[in-house]
Length: 293
Image (cartoon, rainbow, N blue to C red):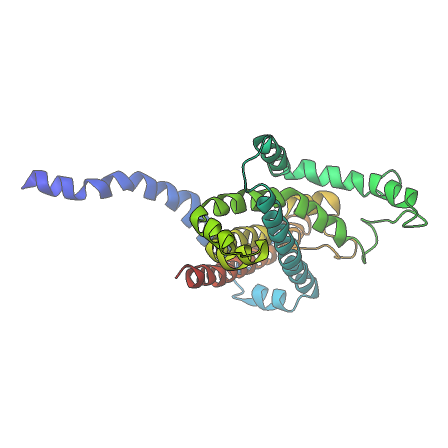
């Protein structure tokens, strides 16, 4: 009997170390940071930390800079993620069938995804530099523009380099996911449709696209959540400027909490950003479940 009881509870006993690690590394810091977000704690200011309830949250919801950061994050999510998706799908369709050198091409396409975000930020900051940037050199050489554009200084164009950098880095992720999805499409269905006289577009629309819909939504979910926490590339390229034109949730939280030292206020922004991520993830996973049925 004792042996049976031991075997029954052994899995739970083995999980105890993991629960303890999760408790001290995740749960306790989360609870502590949430409590701090309900105070007026200021970094490096002794005596601060008085409990003020949800005043930080009420203040941040009315903050125009936070509104701008949220809009930019949403814009990045809609434009960059969808562009990555459709470019990735197009390239994946070109690489769908086996041919000589296919593996080498796929390996080369993956390279941007493996580069550190800080390196990408520095790379694109150099490419779009007003004085010695390659982009201005090419555009002026082709007579597309008459004089160099201050890409990272002018508020009306500063977001364009950010979008291009994000699309360049993460389109390979979409390519890999789409290639994996296309491999799951039954060849027999495509061959049968081809014999019946279906065009390439019809085969894509009625067979391939329907089969990879769940994978499309999963890819969108992963990248959308990832975009909400983007920080490195934007911080390196523009720091959220000029005049908050490229401010996103990540740079807003960093600047507020660590640069302006309004630590509790920054934590409130972080929890709102986390809530936004959860809402987006919940909605997108619902779409995955719908198309998977």
